[in-house]
Length: 455
Image (cartoon, rainbow, N blue to C red; front, top):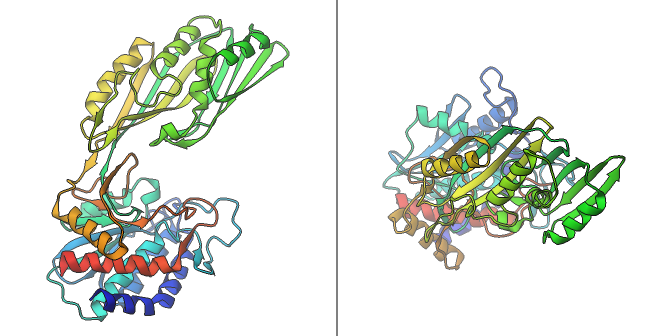
């Protein structure tokens, strides 16, 4: 049966490319809502066109107020496949037209080619193959197409308030083989009034979910020589640029960026600069606050040990912490951090510990978060998808845990299944692409998964 599916989908490859090119032509990044278009007209039109294509394939379709839509094959769906049609803005640096699909060799370029319009097209044609080949299903399958994954997944929250999801759901918007655990996430903000004659200002980081690569501070009443000497003794691998401008000294720290879910891959310029400032003769209360931050969130420490929140379990690994924003304007010091925590912990427990620690160093805290997402690795659903991956790809596969979140984080029993394989498809960057052969390979994978779960 797999060979029959493979041959059919191979023959469909030109049509798959044509369908993907049409969906790429919609610049469907989130815009301000308009009447009947909660995320802007382009996202609405992209969803409408995708559902029209699915209807032409013979699927039952439904548009749920242009937040999301579904295409159903069969009755009483047991499996839902959740993909999204929204994209991030094109940005700069493209050598191809971002919203006009370009095929060069085995690559199809365009914004959304891999994230997530290409995978959505593969699901469409997997379902089409099963229907056209007359493969019987004992239960139905539906493709759910959202339009707000990139900006918080409010589309699926709305969809779930109107429609019931099948008992089994996977998203082809992450990595193979199967992601069954996603750590919990906490965003902690802190602030305090603070005045200083010597620390004029401090700015580090702009995005809470990224390890900052740059940070800068302005000090006065301390010589550039003294600061350079302290920098040499700091043990930091971030690079410090120290310039004397009149009576002030400007200090710039340059490190290495990383996603906050993998903070050990970066070199945090913010905590490096805090480490340097903590060694300088600042005046109070800035001295105490900077030293408190350095002691609680030390440079190069990413497991939350000094903050008293370190945690680990065998299933999901260790807690990670990235101090990602810190600002001081002469009147107030404020910051934010990103914490990813394992299944063995909770938002409530970590929040209590962290709030107490921040209070001890003089800061008020504002903490919010989401709990971990976990589907047992020995569940029938996960084991079936792993078997599909092994049989179709020929590669061994085990369920994996990640620090980031996927489209199914808030869906009970949901897992991620494809489509990334370690190749740099330039997701969220210029010249995003998908291999045209991958469109076929993924469609075969999804068809096999549908047959084993619903057939």
